Length: 200
Image: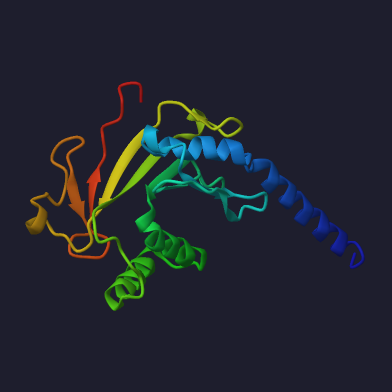
C-alpha cells in the first residue's frame, strides 16, 4: 500500500493539472471576452490580464491606451470581466494581492484605507471609471470568448466624496439611478447599474 501511494498521489495531481489546463480558455478567447467590458473605442488598445495554463494571473496583452482589462476568472461561477482606467491599477493590484493572501473583504477594505491615508497606496486624483460586464455561464462561450446578452455595471471612483459633496443619494431610488457607495472613504464611488434588458 505504501509503495502505491506516491503513484496515486502523482496521478491525482496530474489529473488535476490536466483538468485545470483544459478549463482555461486560450489567451485569444480571454482577450476577446475581457475587452467586452470596455467602451468599444477603447478595446483595441487595452492592456489585458488573464490566466495561464496553471490558473495564475498574467499579462496576456500589453496595450497602448489608458484602459486595463481583467479576464473572467475560470475558477468562479458565471462570467465576469472588468476594465478600468490605468490610474486605478495600484488600488486594483493591491486588492488582488491581499485577496490572494486569503484576506477577507473587510480586511482588504481596512488595509487599503490605512495605506491610502498613510500615502503608501495612491488613489487617482480625478474621478476614474471601472466597467464591469457579466453574464450567466450559459451565455458565455469560453472557446470563442463570445458573450450573449450580458449586463453592464459602471463604477466611478471619487475617493472621500460624500453624499453632501456630490448630491448623490446613498441608495438608488429608480432603476439605473446613480448613487454613492462607501462615502467618505478611499473607496467612495458612484454606482450605476442599468436595468437588465427585456431579453434577460
